[in-house]
Every structure is written in structure tokens, then in C-alpha cells.
Image (cartoon, rainbow, N blue to C red; front, side, top):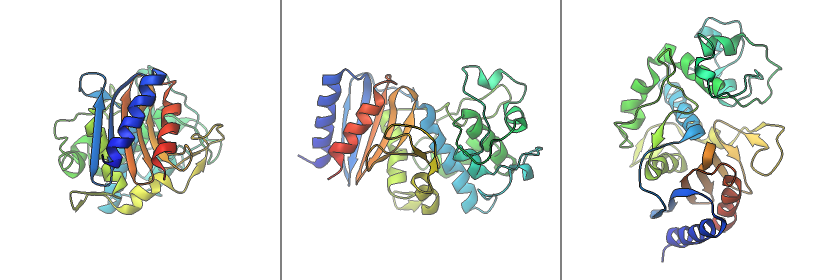
Length: 282
């Protein structure tokens, strides 16, 4: 039995024992894969895992020379704020705009509202509005972000028909709004594990992928897995790092394993991520 299958079986047993409401799991170790489903295989909202797609969009634009992550957003949008794309994508703008279910429609222009608020300095504050504003700024250089990504990322990954949900102004939600099957989300994980290369073709620079789990920002958070954040990635638990969406959408990178989970269980996700980190790390 392959290491992927062994890890899959250990994880399925733990999930069944704990009652975590998983829908599907995809395990990749080296070139081996193993999967399991508890529910029908359909596309589901991946929530904040979409932030990694926003980072990949920005990285591709950097590779093409149309933007810099350290360029002030004021050079792309009418604002006096001196934040950069990197600040926005690492949640280190210091701008406080908490999540609400109606965030995208609470103001005529969420990006303008976000950038009009004061900053507490380059400190961590997690908000979907930050990623949304970053992608609105990026679109001033690339055009519509979904259209930009279709030939550069979505089509190569076999996700030609994916669509990104949009705000009332027609902009991609950015920090959420993508629906993928478990295996489709795992394709993002494999691209990231292989530092931007897919099927022998480089889609994004290794520097962008490496920055997803380096150059950490201290969050002030407590608990293993919430103390440091990078370009869409959370450090931990343990020696792992992860993309983490609401309701248990996980892509966990532990040693040479990538474990992708679709679920509907926000409260149980941390324990599952910790188990993955423990059993996947030699």
C-alpha cells in the first residue's frame, strides 16, 4: 500500500471516529494519490482558500512585469492610503474592516470604503475586504481578474469552466467565491507543492509560491496554527502550513504530503489539520 493510501486510511478513520463533517479528502504523497468521499462529489465554495488564487493572480502579474507587490495601491486606485499589494495580501495593512455577511453590499464601493479607513500601522488584521481590494487594484493593470487567469491558471489546471462570484460592482469577491471539487482544489495544492510548476509547465514563479509560507507576519493570535500568516498561508500546526477556508476547507502541506479536505465543520478543522501534521511528518 502506498504512503498516500496509508495516510488516507489513517485520516478517514480519525474523521469517522471524531464525527468531523468531511465531504471528501484527497491525499498526494510524491506521485501517489488516494481519495475518499463521504458525500456526492460536487463543487463547493472553498471560502478563504480562494485567497491563494488571488495571490497566484498577483504573482503571475508580477512575472509578466505589469505590477509589483511592493507598489503603492495609490498608483492603481484613487486613494491616499500608502498600503501595497503585499500589505493587502498578507493582511498587514492595519486597516480594520471586520467580516460581515453583507460586506460586499454594505457600501457603494467596498474597496473605496476599506482604503478610506485609518491604518494602525503595518500590523495584522484579517479581512476579506483586504483581498478584495487587492484584486480590484490588480484589475487596473490586468483587466478583469477572472478573465486574466483563465488562460494563465484555470485552463492549464483543467478548470476552464470555473467562475468567480462577484460583488454588485461586478468585481471578483477575491477572498471567497470560488467553488471547486475536492480534487480540483487539490490541483492548486499540487501546483503550490511543486513551486509553481504544473505538468512540466511553469505557471507562476517559485518566489510567489515560496512567499505563501515565508516572510511570516505575526498575527497576535493564540493557538498552534494562528500565530503567523504569509501570502494566504497560515503557519502550522506543528511543522506543517496550510490554506484554510471557513467550514473546514483545507489544503495542508506537511513534509512531502499535500492533503486536501472539503467539509462543513468549521469548529473541527483545527483538530483535523493537527492530526494531518502529526501523521504526515516523518
